[in-house]
Amino acid sequence: MKFAPLILKHLRKNWLRTTSTVLAMSVCIFLFCVLQTVIAAVNFGLHAGSTRRLVVRDYVSLANNLPINYKQKIAALPGVTDTTIVSWFGGIYRDPKNFFPNLAVEPEAFLRIYPEIMLPEDQKERWLSDVRGAIVGRKLAQRFGWKIGDTFELESFIPPYRVGKPFDFVIDGIYDTDEAKYPGTDLGAMYFNFKYLYEATGRQVGIGTLTAQIDDPSHAGAMSKEIDQAFENSDNQTKTETEQAFRAGFVALAGNLALLLNGIGMAVAFTILLVTANTMSIAVRERQQEIAVLKTLGFSSGLVMGLILSEALLLGLMGGLLGILIARGIITGLTYVPFLGDVLRGFPNLGLSPEIAALGVGIALLLGLLAGFIPALLAYRARITDALRQV
Amino acid sequence: MSATAVAAKTGAVSVQNVVKIYQRDSQQIKVLDGLTLEVPQGEFMALMGPSGSGKTTLLNLIAGIDRATSGSVHVAGTDLTPLSEGELAKWRSSNVGFIFQFYNLIPVLNAVENVELPLLLSDLSKKERRERALTALRIVGLADRSKHYPRQLSGGQEQRVAIARAIVTDPAVLVADEPTGDLDSKSAEEILDLMQTFNREFVKTIVMVTHDPRAASRAHTQRHLDKGVLTE
Image 1 (cartoon, chains in turn blue, green):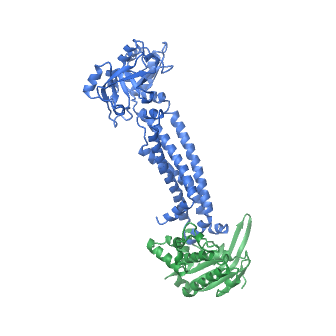
Image 2 (cartoon, chains in turn purple, yellow):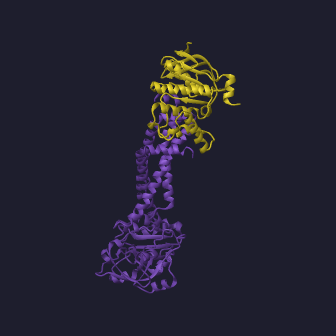
């Protein structure tokens, strides 16, 4: 601690250089935190996928529906224990900016297959007996101030589901979940009875996706293949995959996006590393005389190296903390931006986590350490007589 | 037994048969050629000679900031030859004070902080360090400039702060490399007065490299080097 004033005074002396380095570092950490938060938010949804659940959809496109009779055929396959239709409705509540996921399901089977959707018994009974009924997640209810018995309307943007007037719904239940047992469960979604959609569209619509529960998760690959083979020669071939794979593929994010975002983060971090290393090198080169004087006074080479590294670490720490503050502000602020905020709110777990913040500080310190290492090593090796001769 | 006491018995500085060779690319340059020098305790010695004669090299060896190629260097009762870099650094921190031609104060530190710098390596408390640094500044007559930064001081004042820094750890030996080389004649006289005071009143052994005959005349003895050999 007694050397702290020496370190701080050097940073203060070149305040412009210090400020620009800290800002550069903070941009790096800010980007890292935001990118990691997005990746974490995407991955969070993937955790909800059960390995016992397979998702069957049209081979060509999610926009194509599967024939209704596929449900019976799939349910009859050995190893399939239960099935439910889960069709994306694409309903809009008043304004597109009020986006939330809304899906048509078969309530009884849906609640059996998705135990993470937890409803009080009375609400469950009400929903099962009410064709117009809907259940909404706790966060969605909070978002719009909904309570049991409230009604609302949704109008789908998907052509087969547009029937000339909005669909009206009654809130029969507000579901919750056990977040410890079922992390990643979306509490911002709404589910309603597929029968309502089917009847309202004149029994013209098919299955968006079908969730098939299987008896043994280790057979998921074989079962997927078996289901797809069953419809191999039909007009509507299927594509079956685990729920996790479906979610990852559906949002087209988990694999490639993470790679892309991490790549961007790495490139930025490397650039900042070079900038900071350059700054530290200049700072140390300017202080050749001082380093020689310190060594003449009895400061060991290790201590001088430690002082330079401490300076670099302090730059990293300041940059890291500032970056986290900016990231936190931006992540919160973006959810209030029109349209973009609606998309971001669609992620159930968007927010800078303490883990990502700690990792951000750790990376900032590592960048500082790496940036300061070569200059510190040069200071360590500097011979007093050589350095004094350059003065 | 203190370093000063040991030095009183053995001589403050004893350089025996020292050879110093610098390697420049493939060329070897012999700067000191079997040089032997004894500086008794309490001596004020001036080393003179033309540029490249090896004066500064000899001073660096005595100060423990360079190593001889062969021969031995004893200073303040310690044989510097076998010491590691770390041991040499520790030895320098309490046994030798260095006065540079260009003062070499740390620009971001004020006068008292510059003087306090060597004490950071001691076990003294913050308060004790500050008191000692202020005392050293008082001795060189700059107590009222303790909060001034080097850029706010004249050359003579900077050199006095540098001298305060050199004496603050109470070393047995002071080495000075052209201490008046960058000063006007009045400031140079003040610095030499100060050095004489330390020599007389505090019995500091001083080895001073200088080109200036007037500065050299303040010393008890003058030795001349030429081509790495003492000539008188």
